[in-house]
Structure formats: structure tokens, C-alpha cells
Amino acid sequence: MVNEGELGYVLGSKYWGKGIATQAVKLVADAIFKEWPHLDRLEALVDVDNAGSQFTKDA
Image (cartoon, rainbow, N blue to C red):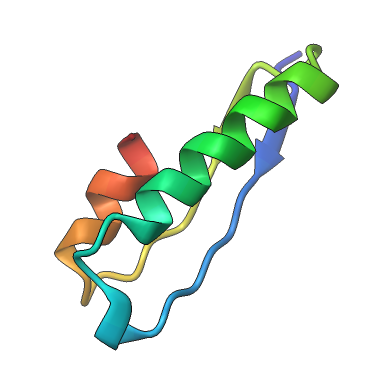
């Protein structure tokens, strides 16, 4: 059995491309895996209109 978590994030378009979501996702993902070490992975849905969102998810 795979233990999965889900991560969601929304950032106003005027803040896209500034690395804000990437930094936040890295910090939150690190904290989640420390607090819940039984998780195997996190999943996230991305905004298809924001090409950088795919990068953020994979960061």
C-alpha cells in the first residue's frame, strides 16, 4: 500500500515567476515528510495556464 498526501497551492498571477510557490512547496514538503515519515509521496494538481506551476510541483 502506498501512503500518499496531497498538496495544494494557489498564488495570484501577478506573483507568478518569482519563486514564491517553489520556495513554499519545498519548505512545506520537507516539513510534511519530517512530521509524517510514513508518507511515500505527495501529489499536487497544477494550473495548466501557468507553465511554471509544473516546475514548482516537481521542485
